[in-house]
Length: 592
Image (cartoon, rainbow, N blue to C red):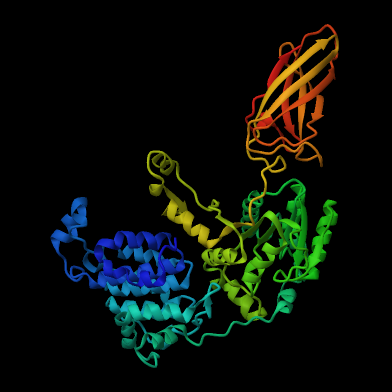
């Protein structure tokens, strides 16, 4: 959810305590910016609530237990009683900005009981989190130790959050909303202080000495991912016993992405940043023609070994995904898995993907999202090797896709293997709305809709379409036939015509390559309808049949015995894909 712009989110406290339910729902379901600013708004509403500083029996007990009175007498409760635990949940959010906003919001509540929830943030990775937590603890009546030691080892804020937002700008917004809480930092002993008390000065103080983005160009990527020492793992990925958890995750991403490629049989798919070509190998085994592009020739050489081992045709390209050396309109699909976040110019990748796709082609991505660049491994990669370890933020790439010209965009609500439901939860879920379903991850309960939406932001999978591919029997949608036989038997010979009508929405192809061409198939059954011959007769239509169209097909076949009784099972077959009966169409049984 990113329903409101920052300006509107900053004005949410004007709605008062009666809007807390809506605001906290947005904080649970929104992207990082929505979550941060909604948590900030909830804290400010608590601070402004005249009943949050003293216990009022009517409002704090009776009114909150009678639904009809809740809107008439809205209140955040004593010290934000009704919202502070929900705010505290965000102290473990994946995004450092959200964690910082949650700490500042709890500082507005002034609740001494929140101290234990805030203390772990004093050792958080980023300087802004530690300062916010220390200031909030002081506001809650729990002085902290010497401020200088609190900041030892704290990392400055990254230059950007995602692709487009400067960290300093977000911190300035938070500082303008929580001046009183931040002022409590000045009460700590021996600590640094901002140059002034303006939001901009506080933002600079919270961020610390923000480093410029260090990117040493494609050569750094090549050197880091040249596979030295990792050959055995890369040759077996994603089926290696090494990094099993990661292998399962990327294999899941592949399966979800592959399902949405919408490729025709033997379709051409470009694997961007394909490296050692594990994605390309799996695509080739699914019957597609895969082309692997990567900056590193060393990684591609491992890919060639992988393809040679499996006896697959290898198509490898050394190149940059922002300048793809591939002809315009030559690909049926483009896929990128766990590689786009290494690219300094993400919009250029979208422009190139759009250019190389044929009409109706799809660009599918599966990437790490919010919080990825904050992990210890990502920060070490950027510091030690000078490579890109950015985050792919869902709504940013949706914007890049639209700017590149993609006409339709889908976000895939993929499942998350790490969550479970107890049998009791499942029984309750079967009797309750989905927004009340309870799931568990690492023994912690969550509500399913919120978790699912956050999972989509944590690891976005998205599909970008370049127009619409014609629906034909190579990529069928509804295959349904009405069959009318006009056949006669003379001894062992059966001949006549069969009229077929296309009652589905898929254009039947009657000529061309084997796969995806529609023919009339006749199976032989005995008088008791036991199968005798699955391939008694197969006749190509010879011409395309559009939805609603009809065609007479000449049939001539020979039976095994001139005297025996048989049943002919007549159906349409989409060669290399399915019999129509397999997808719900009704065949005809014709006794002869």
